[in-house]
Image (cartoon, rainbow, N blue to C red; front, side):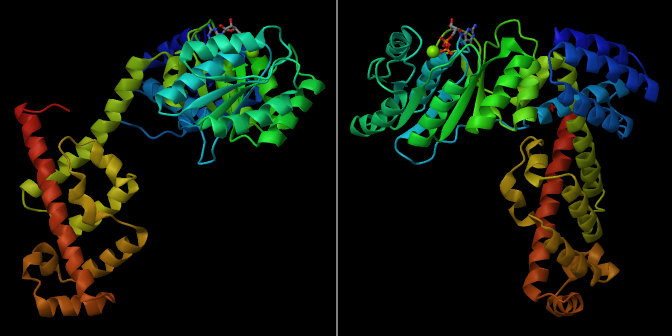
Amino acid sequence: SLSERLQEIFKKLRGKGKLTEKDIKEAMREVKVALLEADVNFKVVKDFINSVTEKALGQEVMESLTPGQQVIKIVNDELIALMGSTQSRLNIGNKVPAVIMMVGLQGSGKTTACGKLANLLKKQGKNPLLVACDVVRPAAIKQLQVVGANVNVPVFTMGDKANPVDIAKASIDYARSHNSDVIIIDTAGRLHIDEELMEELVNIKRAVQPDEILLVVDAMTGQDAVNVASSFNERLDITGVVLTKLDGDTRGGAALSIKAVTQKPIKYVGTGEKLTDLEPFYPNRMASRILGMGDVLTLIEKAQAAIDEKKAQELGQKLLTKQFTLEDFLEQLQSLKNMGPLDQLLSMIPGMNKNMLKNVDISEKDLKRIEAIIQSMTKEERQNPSIINGSRKKRIAKGSGTTIQQVNSLLKQFEETKKMMKKFADIDKDLKKGKMRL
Ligand code: GDP
Ligand code: MG
């Protein structure tokens, strides 16, 4: 499988202390073959390999990771990016009823997915209605009724003689008069894409203006799934994909290519025949599943946390030796800003209270102002802010083109930060004493 192949390739890298350009290129060549054999779209593979190679060659050294581990991290990050980075939710707004249209080839798992989705929405407090618009496949209506009964959701049908567009339209009125707030339309499929089917789907779409058009594709069909997704997307401008049969022996190619090729996210995955076997699609979980290297990924996460922790400990050290001044404060603000969102950084520190930092929220503009204020202080004032009295404040405000209130607010921020630093220092002490573990 893809996962096994990648593990083999990375095992070789992990053993090495130092990676040469040749090592990386050789590994990437193998990854490329593995991806192609897993049925990932050719162009997707090409872009992916280029991007990973470029990043791997230009990577900064993280002291706690081996070069091999760093390459794995890059591959993992790129896999996640390929699949859309974040989990995509259903986009059903306030229209009543919301309309979800399920489309796809025959046997892809549409009818099953209708039932699974109805079940999920019901658990979220919705009141769904299933709509039987597949009048082609023998016993399709009966199948939907069985599915509906299993999840205890009503099914709207007008038999198999009615026109699917009429059924879809009528179902909206039915939903309104029966308190259903979301309708899920099961449509007909074909063994292959054909014009008649597409036209029917386009007509249903036009008639009911769905909030979501979810394409159901069978993950086992690999590259075909991607082609199918492309064609349906061209005609219907789908809003997302349900990737089914991920429980089977899939090669992973479809999951990796669909977003890149169609620009539409995978929203759910089907993981079995039961009506509870539907899960939201998480790109990061899928990536670690494909890489099959939970241990390494955990290690990488820890290494990153450790780097931030080290910075925090250095700050704590400064405070313990009473060296933390307004100059340090300025420097810390700048480096915190470089490290990314403050709350993210904070969440890594146990016992950290986010409210403590309410006054330390910094923007580019704030930072410029803070810089100007601190630069208008004398060295003595920066070392020992407690001497800054009213007349000094007035002078500082004037010198920095700010107001006394702004000087006051900075001094307050400094005190808050000092408190925060103290907290870091305490955590550091506790860690050393073994009272707390990260
Ligand atoms: P439709 O023709 O698109 O409506 O497809 P169906 O919903 O009738 O499903 C076709 C077959 O695929 C049925 O036997 C389903 O039980 C099966 N199936 C659907 N989704 C999944 C899944 O996620 N995993 C597995 N293993 N089987 C599935
Ligand atoms: Mg069906």
